[in-house]
Amino acid sequence: MNDKEIVDYSVQAAVPGKIQDFIKSLPDASIVGLTGYGRHRLKDFIPRGNVITEITAHATGAIMMAPETRCLLDIGGQDSKAICMNGKGHVLDFRLNDRCAAGTGRFLENMAHILGRNINELITLAQNEEKGVPISSVCAVFAESEVISLLNDGINEGKIARGVFNSMTAKIAPLLGALPSTEKIAFSGGIASLEGTASLLSESLPCSLVTLPFPQLIGAIGAAVKALNVADKEEY
Amino acid sequence: MTQSTDQIFDELREHLRDGTVYIKEASEAGRKVVGYYCAFSPKELIYAGKAIPVGLCGTGEKSIAPAEQHLPRNLCPLVKSSYGYALTDTCPYLHFCDFVVGETTCDGKKKMYELLNKIKPTHVMQLPQTNSRPEDFEYWRKEMYLLKRKIEETFHVAITDDDLEREIYLLNRERKALIEFYRLAALTPPAITGREIRVMTEYADKTFDKEQLIKKIEKITHLVKEAWDKGERRISPSKPRILITGCPIGGNVEKVVEIIEDNGGAVVGFETCGGLKSVSRFVDENKHPMDALTERYLQISCSCLTPNRGRLDLLSDIIDEYHVDGIVEVVLQACHTYNIETYTIREFAREQKNIPYLSLETDYSRSDTGQLSTRISAFIEMF
Image 1 (cartoon, rainbow over the protein chains, first blue to last red):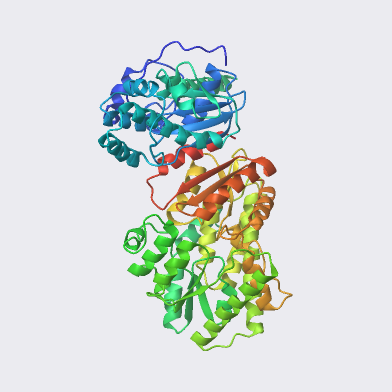
Image 2 (cartoon, rainbow over the protein chains, first blue to last red):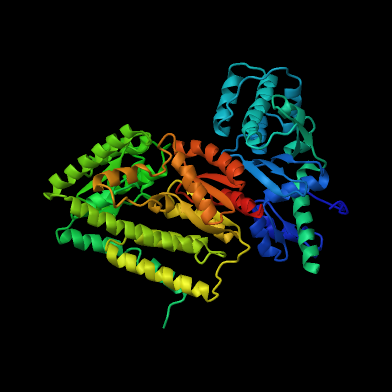
């Protein structure tokens, strides 16, 4: 696995109606790995694509980027997941958040939006504050109305921002708690790619989050590695 | 011409609705019909009272919205759906029932039965919350006698020990036939799919001529086994063998079975009501029939009992006998007892059996198909 390296990458927003344009923009490759929510849809356009779930993809990608990884936390736009794996990147167990968007990237985006900020500003606000106000971790929609009430009560933005991250941690902790405990947990996903989020989120966790290189690409890297492995096997 | 194994199950599928006609005609001919919802209902007692026990509808999504006019949204879909069918009179089986037998299994059901009683007379059996003490046996036996009296008084019949023994013998034979059929999935590779197991379970549940049914199950088991012995292989031996456990499977919850099998898994058994949980224990034919029925029906390993040690014993036996590679637990939304028990089952799978375990919470909608598919596919990729 270590003989592989990343030669090029790009990140594009998923626009449902523009799937053809997206396919056209891809470089020509004989071996393709597909993962994520649209994996089966993309397979219709790229039949040679090797489809795997984002769980397997993230475990494989994490081992490629940091071979010592045994547990991974991935916070994506729509879900968050905790995965534990062996040294070969084989998934041993995993937990996903339930249906609610609390504890996902979307939740942070929405919270920032209510405060009239972008995510980076939300992070800075939280970092500059010692203690946050309690914000419901149960439901993303309730949390929104809670934040609006807090603003109306004159609570300062920093305390709210900090509270938003604490609420994320409260949502993540049970995911991690379900898996065998480790001191260090690899951290990936779009949120992980933002400076400062790992320390903000690991504050009240019993373990520390270690951000992987290219955190936003871990799933794509895993899908690519798997596709290469499958192609290698077929050659024999 | 002999049928192929696929054709056997296609034919069963075509006859899944025959039960409604049977019950309509039986009712119109003067036969009494008693509805039930749960594996705890002693069907032998009902048959012994010359009535027909019928499992009632409770797995449809359509009946949930009407039910929510009376019941809270945040309630188990099975409870809501069952009530909705009654409210809209859309369950043909319930329509022809003379009365319904319910049990105090969970809070949702026992409170729903109060409302159901206004639509259809409902006799509620008081189920003890635990089952290992002699007092629990005594308590449940009294409930058995109360139901016996209810049937005798309502239908003006006398239920004799001979009647009970006859029905116990008959339904034990049905259980035995079903177990032998289910064991086709214990073969390596399995001779039948999870979908086919479900079809047979449904078919058996809705076929009321039990003598005919037993013959049919035995014939199908024989034909499928014969084809397998001759080398017919319909399921790849490399597929991970999955046991489904938890809440009842039916209606839209079958989506879980479909997703597992469409993503490379082989479902080999159901430790659920209607599945192996319902047929795995026989009624003792050497005891007094009322004692034997009491004992047997108190041993159903439902999460509503505390503790529920019997479920781990049953799971352990199934895992060994069916060579199970992984467990998928299906919990219906707001089913607290099964939901809490997932912790115990997960630990049991991981530590005692050393096999992977996945728990899923779902309802009767199809809106979570994407999420379920991701979780299940990832689970299957682990093997």
